Length: 265
Image (cartoon, rainbow, N blue to C red; front, side):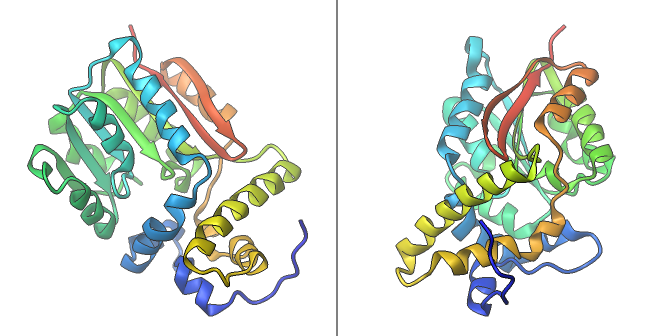
């Protein structure tokens, strides 16, 4: 699809919260407006998000794996950790995000059982974050959703190593992630699919929204600067090199991938 480069309507910019400023691009996600607009408008439009979460849970629950502690890294509103805890209601969850607004949303999700869990404002861009979660280690499951791709490839590998060290024996790590397409053609197919999903979601609230307008906002959104995408193949190889077993991409829809591995031996 070829779309002329036109100014993004201000209405769409503020509706989706896609403005981003600053040298370190991912810090824009600390903004309350951006966090709330993402949770309200974008997260629910991610194609096949329910299926991704179902696959994540299937991997974690395989072989009757018991989860007593789960870490949700870059947790947003805690949707992934909550899915794990739904299957393991006695589990203690530790939810980490560097956005105060996201942590508030996660705490709200667990309003009735918040005292059972920990909600931590922490930035894993450096290894300092480990001191914030060490007291609850080791973890039987660690999950992350659409977060680690904001780190450099070098830091991604380091984070995966830190996750490995935090896992209990037979612990499972699953990353629900945005990954790099192998070609521009495949990237375009993903863009078409995501725009269709956004269009369906937006028009349920605003029947007058046009697909072209949504496409312009998607293609020229400034938050792309915060994405440092790596292929799922490379990331699976990094996990294997660290020592993870049973590493695989368990689900993939273009640039949406669910992958991870287990700590065994």
